[in-house]
Amino acid sequence: MSSRVIDTSASASALDLKLYSVLREFNVYELNRLSKFVNSSYFNKNERLVRLFEQYESIIRNGAASTLTRGQAWSSATLDTTYNDQKFRKLCSDLLRLIEQFLVQEQFEKNPLHKADYLIQAINEKKLDALTTSSVRTARRLSDQYFFRPASYYYYQYAFERGIYGMNELEIDRSKVMNVEQIAQNLDTFYLAEKMRYYCYALVRQPLVDHEYDFLLMDEIISHIAKMGYDEIVPINFYYQIYLTQKEPENTVHYTRLKSLIHDYIDQLPNIEAKEVMDAAFNFCIRQINNGNKLYVKELFELYKESLRNELIYVNGILDPWNFRNIIVSGLRLGEYTWIDRFIHDYQDRIDIKHRSNAVSFNKANLYFYQKKYDQVMQLLQEVEYEDPSYNLNSKAMLIATYYELDEVEPLLSLLSSFAVYLRRGKSIPQQRKSHYQNLVRFVRMLVRTPIGDKAALKKLRKKVTDVEGMVNKSWLLDKIDELL
Image (cartoon, rainbow, N blue to C red):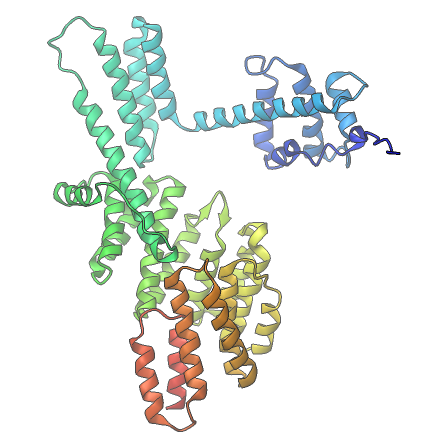
């Protein structure tokens, strides 16, 4: 005999729905604007959505209720005491669609170039000849108000000129010179800048992934930019210099030029694109450091401090955990222990909550390692969750160094063996990165097995370590060999 399933959905919480989780992300100013939007009869004619929104808004603003059941939310929104779960979910879905519409409107309002484009489109569509002159003037004014000069700026200039072309096509005078050159020039500039942007991203990312990026016509594009210059086009100028730093890293003139561009023009890029440029500069310095050029440790550290001051290192106010780590590593290599300790304390809350615990534990362990507080290193590494392969790899490398410093030979050899197996089986680890850790395992094992006092063997090992391309903790291992020579 089957038991009857009682429908309890009316008593279920209304605060575990996607609608509530979305609304909680809005700050007070955004809630104010959203409230006006939801209450606007132009955008919303459904009073039920207004009442449903007001319940959630009250809870978020004032903590008016610690609980809200779906039945309560339904009856307040619909004035109907008989709960219908299917209809309630539909109501929540409709409110979410309205919120999405609000987000679209918010983005539209942020960018005057959108307005300029759509104004011209509307004039053309309605054939409002009386507004043509004033609308073109307004569109140009809106365009001039836009301070930033990313690739998208030239797309909107292309769209604007295309709209002007549409207006001119209606004229009878066929002898008039049309603006097709301006259309083509802006389209070309947008294409070149955007293509270079993503090509540079691929170049920077290539060593980290097992994937060969393929971009159409890049040789022709690079050749064209080199020939034409484009010095006055900020995004193309930036991305071409990034390309040169990636392709010719031994020529430091390219980096000097990139740094000069950053100083003079970085404020002309929106935050996300400015951060991409800064990341490319960081990447160049890191590559130089990894190749043994220690002068770039100071360079990298100063770049990071500058990006913290002007907030170009953040994305939507969030500090990437790997930039957090790299700032700390560069500071530690310079002996800036007090600054780093304060930095971890002051900036940890800028890391996304999902990554914060791991980032803080791992990087505090790194600080303690440099301060030779090895017992605290091992304690903190136990707090790091190894679901992220990067933390697993970096923690293992730090633990290898810690065991060596503590002269814990048996645990060290055991770790080297298990880590070697992990690397060999780790199919998701890019091959180049894997080899960097495999070199660490191989050479630490050789050092441990080298007889004490065998200076000839140590010198031979030192040369091998020096000559190897790509190795984690290379400077540390060379220091350990030197201590024995």
